[in-house]
Image 1 (cartoon, rainbow, N blue to C red):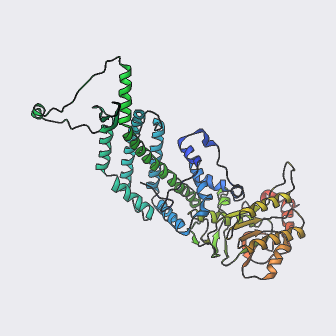
Image 2: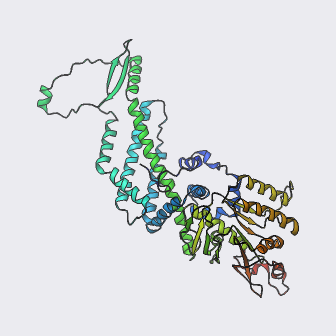
Length: 526
């Protein structure tokens, strides 16, 4: 029995860390080692803000959401739509989904409290642990079946199949049969084994047998045919004989012990998988509630096939910025269909970096099957995404900013593949305008030749002007809007680069002799 809420044909299998977190092992505090580009994504896109909003102080939800987001690049269009359907059901039937999740936690916590040891070297110990575990989990299966029978209007293929399986395979008769077998396997009426004698008169082929039904009338007991056999009794002090009988007992119940332990582990694995997969959707529901409470728009994006060069959206905003603010964030619209290069220029503090982050977050959220922070969003899938943002000066002075930028770019080139997405934010601005523009131009041209999509936020006028003058059909230029009085609207409009980024506006804003201080700046400037 499988939950199949994340994939139509396989389970969602996060790293060993999540199993450690579930079982409470000490190693759970040691984080999973992430590739360098994943660490850069987390830092540059401020993913921790998004993940904390999804987790709501639950470490397990945090880690599952993190793995789901960062592993979404392997998903295809069908998988994304499959998850979107499940999430839409979750948003419609929140109470049932949360009850399901709480039930899986209860089942796993109950097994942790009782500590069932299925790895002992003694078959009798394993058998009793497996029986206790199955008795505990069978009660939880009954609750799960009852919840499936009361389920509301679920329409997704995943939930429909899951509830149908629970109703069909966990009937009252089936659960009663499980309980009857578990009671018999406690051997309260004794243990019946059959055996054969080997070449040296040793016992071989020990097989566990079902005890005969002894529920007979007094007349049947009087006239029943006695079975031919012999009986012997051990002396209370015969330790060697007791040890031999114990060994025979363990050998006889060995096969039953293995089957029962496997059955117990199978049922427990089902609860673990169901909890893990539901955790992702619980995190999505938590984030949805945070955004809905602020009146922020969300939509289920339309994924396009890799290489189709689709990238069109309206009302797209930085979800992480919104989570930090009290008010709503300004959204942006653009039509990047057929474009390989999108260059963003314009006034300082005009919302360029926030826009770039919104593009990266929307891509991550779409590819893992979530909604996105926008009114409408359609984009092609990409096999990988990289960020190359400017960094602060190295505190240890081991290398300069420009050397560090080149080193990170080299690491990206070593892993990038065609149709990947790279987000540049003020890259190669640590040197002078002329050299920085030339380096940026050479790198971007090489990436475009390999069919890699590029979003580039820059103040390098010479660099952006080179591409603007080419008037190629696969380039898109956006510029942060600045009104004549210097006001930033935080909207991006189509437009070519300007020679100035209006740094004097910031100077006046900070050092205005009339008394306006930096504290008067708009709170959503990033």
